[in-house]
Every structure is written in C-alpha cells, then in structure tokens.
Length: 504
Length: 127
Image (cartoon, rainbow over all chains, first blue to last red):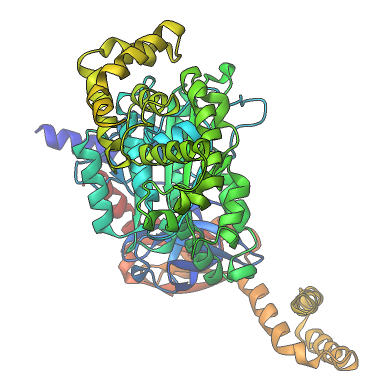
C-alpha cells in the first residue's frame, strides 16, 4: 500500500504543463565534436544535452554566427544527424569536496574505481579565473617533496607552480608520485590531486596501487582521462583537477595538484581545435594554446589571510623531445610557472637518480619558503656543488691536481652520491637536514665513495634509534640552534665511528 | 565574400515581404538585373541559400499524433504564435509515436506537449 501511496503522490506532483525549451539540431558529428544549428542563446562553456538514442552531454565551445561547435562528453556513435540538442543553462562544473578524497574519478567527476556513488554536496566550475592580485600572498610555507636535491637546492613553496620537464625516459612522474607519498606525515598535510592525462590504463592502475599500498590514497584524489578516452576528456581533466584543489584552497587548506602531463593536454586541445576548424598556428596548435595553460596554472595560488590562507600548489609535467626545452610547449609553460625541474637524460644514463640538472633547474619563489634549518645548510651545498661542477672536467686527472682541488672534487663527488635517491623512498624533512648537514660539514669526506650510501643509512638509523629527540627537535623548531649543532656533531661522530677506522 | 551574399539575401527578402505575387515577380526580375549589372551573378546560389534560411526561420513544424480537424489545429496555432516569435507558417506532420498532444518546433525552440514526453518524465521519476 505504501508504494501505491507514494506513486499516487509522485504522479499528482507531476508537471503536466507543456514546456518551452531552447533547442538545436545536430548538423554533423565528427571525432568527439558536433556542429549544431539553432541554440541561438547558448553560452560559451554551457552544458548541452544530446537527446539521441541515449542522453549524452556536451559542452558548447565555439559560438559562430549560425552554428554552435560543441565537444561531446561520451560516445559520439550514439548521436545522429538531426538529433535534438537542448540547453541546460548550467555552466560546466564538477562535484568537489571532502567526499572526493580517496576516489578515482573521470573529468566529469563520475567514479571510476567501482566504490559506488559519490554523495557530493558542492560543485566547482571547470573553467574559472584564478584569484586576483589582492587575494594572493607571497609563498612562505614550504612544500616538502622528500627529494633531497629538490628540497635543498630547488625548494618548492605552497602555492607555487613548478614545472617538471624532461624526456620520455626520465623519472618525472615517479618523482611526482614520491612527492605525494611524502605528504603523508607532513605537518598541515595538503590534499593531493593526481591528474592523469592520456596515460595507459595499466600505468594508471600501477600508480593507484602504489598510492594505495603506501596509504596515500587517504588524502589523494585521482582524476583520470586515459588513452582510450576521447580528446575532450583529456582537455577537461586538468581543469577538473584544478577545481578539486580550489575547493580545499578556498576552505583555507592546502592542496597539491599534479598534471601528468600537459604535453598530451596540448595535443588534445590541438585535436579538438582542428576538428572544430579553428585556424591552426605554429606546429598546428590553435592560437589560444598559451592561454590554455596560463589560465590553468594561474588557478594555483597562495591566498591571503583574509581569504583563509589556503594554497594550491601545481606541479605540471611536460615531456620534452631529445632534451629540447626550447620547443614550443615547454617554453610556454616555463614562462608561466615559477621555475622548473629539468630532468637530464644524460644524468639518468650516468646513474644519477633523480636526474635533476641543477644548472638548468630553478625555483623563483621557493627559497623564501625554505625552513631556517634547510637554508643554513643548503647555501653551502649550493656553493660547493657549483665549484665541483667547474672542477668536474679535471676529474680524470684527480691524482695530479693540488691537494685543495682534490678535496673539493672528493667532497663534490660525495655530495652528488648523497643526493642520489631511490624511487618510492621520499625522506622526511628532518632526515634530509640531518644527512645534508653531515655532507656539508665534511663528515663524509673520508668515507669511500662506494660507502657513502651505506653511511647515510647508518646516520639515519643511529639518530632514529639512539637520538630520536634530535630529529624531533629539527622537525618542530625547523632550525638548527647552536646546542642542536653540537648534539648533531656528537651523534655523527658516534654513528660514523666504524668508517673512521677504515678510512685515513 | 560570404557577407555580401547575406546582405543581398536579406535585402531581397525584406523587399519581397508582404507584396503581391505580380509585384514580387517584378522585384525578383529587377534584382537579377542589378546583380548582373554589379557582376554578382556568382553569388546567386549563396543568395538562394540565404533566402531559404530566412524562410525557414519563419516556419515551424507542428507535430500531431493524428489528423485533427481544421478548427482544432487553428486553435493550437493561434495559441502558439505569440510564443514562437517571428513564425507565420506551420508545416504539419503526423507522427503516431507521440501518442497524443502536440510538439511544435522551430530552429531554436521546442514546445513539447506530447503524451510521449509526459510518460517519459513519469518513467524517470519512478525508475
């Protein structure tokens, strides 16, 4: 009986009046896009509905004199010529919020992980202009990546945009995932958003598995447009990721978004633009290819206190061809971001991992956000590495140079060795400070090059088990006080005792 | 010069509007002479297309489930006209699949008052 009553009520509430709707008709459909006649009052970026065999959504992109060009968000095989297209009056948006954390979604916010429906409360605009000048504040809080070479030499701050660029073989994505893993135990843990654009599903599955295994999914959202998804999905994915991050930024929290990678995003936009018959420019990219990325990356920001003080850090990834960072898309994105990490294939082949080329990598704002502890040691590190680079050419004649040069080369080699880091092994900030302190103060100078890594582990192990207080103090004070310095030196002496004996 | 064809088309359509048939023929003849004199004969196919588009704007398709009496159709038409703006001509189509009621469609607007859509919306509510 209850069901009957319910039905009766529902039917009574039905609206029987006829509706006037603004519609258009499909003229042609090709490769994920459609040309539509009618729809005279449609807005740019408005969601439209194709009423064919199946209801499919689309977004109106090109508003021309008598036609509308739209991208189709779904299967275009279900849409026929002459099908009716309706306006929805809604500008493209995606579900956002706490409920999305831990989920894998497509660029429209629909779950892909089989964990059921997402009961979202809020939605965010896919296309949105970033915060204004007044709403922003300079970057002043570090985003620890857990990668020694990055945190010491090319530091990244929260709200910064730092490009990761390098060849196909380089470990850009892998480093980006390590950055996510490292946030697990960070103070003020940021919500991480990983946007996969045009990746193989097998690779994506592996990435998600790594995140799950390391317990990183509990603070991560994955937005995925895989290789088999049509180009419009690739095009939308980064904007969806930015919308997810903006939600947390506007709520006064920190967020980190990784766009992996924007080269494919540019390809997707080129494909869509060419099919929509927009005039091609250099390398057949449309005229707005710069704006495509600049409006996306401008959404990353550190908000002022009045705005809640949240931040959105962006790490876009760009794939270069043959190490050429002067190509069209890399230079575009370099000029938009606040610095770049350049992954050098040559270093990779020499076995240096991560193969970040310190000379070509910069961080324009991050050093302002570096902690005092790291600042104190990294300036020495930078100087000594630069000297080492100059002397590296003499490496082969190391026996014939004077003592001072020899020592510099030896220290440089040990530092380079120390800066090597395995994948999936991000180092917490306090441990980074510890081992780099050891290197710049010369504690590793007398250790055989092949034993540097072992010594590093010994140092960490010693402090973890015998002097955890020292690590804790570095973590909390974020500084190295004079007392702490003597504690550190005492500890290092003991930790490295066995090597001293073997050495000189 | 796509725009040129459009301007010609619009001018001709405006000139022809509301004129008697004899007068219309005369206007078209004059128009052709002007076009030839200005060496714009090559635009004629485009002008024709433009004229077709203009006449289409004024035409609406009225879809009915079955053939209704003249009176009923007229009543629907007169009720629809203010809603549809410029429209002054209705093309009547019979489509049994809409079951009952009517649908009126122009290039940009759809007024849907069919039983089929109504049943569809009930279905959506219940499923």
